Length: 113
Length: 113
Image (cartoon, rainbow over all chains, first blue to last red; front, top):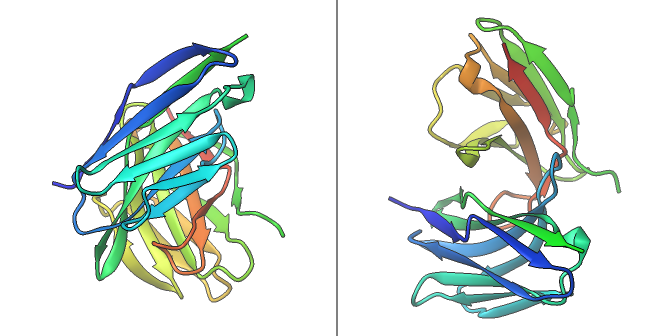
């Protein structure tokens, strides 16, 4: 069964610190992997998208990595800010002729002053 | 460029009733996907429409249905509402579905009492 698992479920860090969120998937055949940020009560917003051949993608203070061999991805947040408090969702696209999105349950990040 | 809009933003219905939610995609986008988000299950894919045709479908009962109009606007209908249908319903639009970038709307918060 295609699955996307994220860890930790929740995380609390102090402003200015770095953190890393994990995403492991069993989706096959793989098309691409996305990281989304979702503020409470809002729709998700895309941070990065990576295909099979890409192993690093940055978007400001957000850096995503992908290891397609081990089927693992991470999202690293540098110098966290209060506005980084949100849920971060990993989404993997399955390619079976028609595409499907498989979502992780997310990591809820809280940044404290 | 206007984003994805969803109406209504909030809705309260009674068990057994039916509900219709609306989604207007970004201009030029032909794909609209619908998702259900609950605290316990995270984001779950309902279905995707492309050029008025349902292209992909998730694992939801037949009470959940949708359609897309020639202007790409989409509606989702839930009949015979159950308490468990209480959720945030999100729609996302893109040029062509996965692997294209998806842009999410703010969601419709449905509460079933």
